[in-house]
Amino acid sequence: AASGTGAALVLQATAEQLPTVAAGLVEGGLSGSTPVLVTTEGSGTAQKSVASKLAAVAEKSAGLEVLTGAVVVTVGSAVDKRGKLSWWESRPLFGWRVLVPRTKEQAGEMSDRLRAYGAVPVEVPTIAVEPPRSPAQMDRAVKGLVTGRYGWIVFTSTNAVRAVREKFVELGLDARAFAGVKVACVGEQTAQAVRDFGIVPELVPTGDQSSEGLLADFPPYDDVFDPIDRVLLPRADIATETLAAGLVERGWEIDDVTAYRTVRAAPPAATVREAIKGGGFDAVCFTSSSTVRNLVGIAGKPHAKTVVAVIGPATAASATEFGLRVDVQPETAAVGPLVDALAAFASARRAEAEGGEK
Image 1 (cartoon, rainbow, N blue to C red):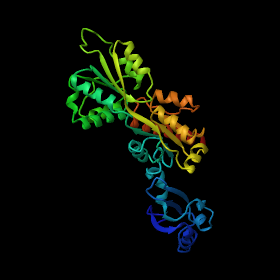
Image 2 (cartoon, rainbow, N blue to C red):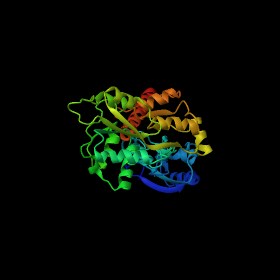
Image 3 (cartoon, rainbow, N blue to C red):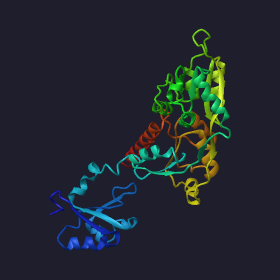
Image 4 (cartoon, rainbow, N blue to C red):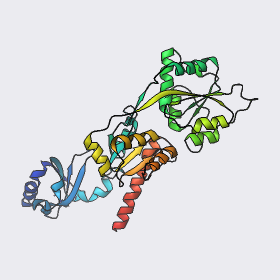
């Protein structure tokens, strides 16, 4: 009945039992041409389905050798509707192994979004964020916010926001210490971290979300309208000079303060290093120049066939510097748009491949 009414017969078995089960169904009266779908690792990111005919399964000629362990067997003409109903395996990044070279604390958001698109994220920490070697510089800077030393504070990363918040807690301060200080953020992700602190930033770049984009929108110092000419710039110890130099050119005095240090993480396991260099990952998502430098340093350069996705122009420049081909770069420099852009790239590649097969 399942073969001709649109109904489906659903069975559980092991991969080794499939020929016996299929032969029994044929002996029981089902046609050997009845559609069959065999699924393993159901509802997981490693789910795999193979479509065939009942007779082929019985004769061990259905190409099911790739399946192992427990399987779900769907039998009947309903299998033919798989193309319309199989949303799980049709997700853009389904089955892709994506390398996530971020700190352990920051990898979660990207990994969750990748899983939603069907990918298998593999987190490989490339940097660890640590406090400055001496707290004195940050202590003076934060106290300067309270005493009115600064007209602006410029945040270039979520790590910088976190470092300032932690220093506030340590000194018994809260967001009220920003009263009278204007806040600029290099990108939307950093701006959201500032909003989570209870502060609405005055400036987020309208163009490129990068140091160059921020400088394009940052106002020059005006001794009439700006009573305070000093900008606080809490950053990583390895930050480039582009932003600081650009602010000085616009007439501002700069306190360039080390808010945190980025330290190269330990190398990943040998199997992971081999997968990176040997093409074992479908894609890699870089979120900063330091993740590019450190991944290459601790694990080697990703294989040429690996899709390289970068969060913004500065990261793209670093990837190019290390000889990597940049395939994906979102319009907005944030984790969400980065993963969305990778999914769109994968969808376009799949559509192109399917079009070539017709």
